[in-house]
Image 1 (cartoon, rainbow, N blue to C red):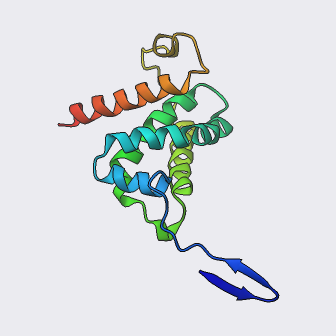
Image 2 (image 1 turned 135 degrees about the vertical axis):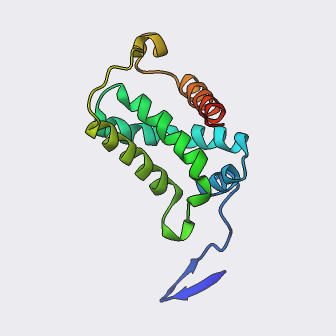
Length: 144
């Protein structure tokens, strides 16, 4: 579609978002597509991890990421594209989870982060994804 604006011609895209856009992936997650969730994690986890680290500045960002992606999976149908971008929606979930963690009293869980992450606080994306997906499976089974 061409639109005339002054002496220049500007092209305006009327194409829908690509099937790999965060919005499209969230829509597929809302339908229970686990492959879309894995792809969404691969595409967005780096930026969202940066949000969590900016707020927490320590390894608790890993916990926030797991909680946030569980929430994203369960609430994907709540995302409304007309209210903002998918990244902004997910970043607000991460931000709120991080702030919740900061407000929560420090309670010892009995599980050491080293047991979970084998002492590596800079985990690979693949390891974080496996833990996140495993966490969702565990929580879904325990909710029944």
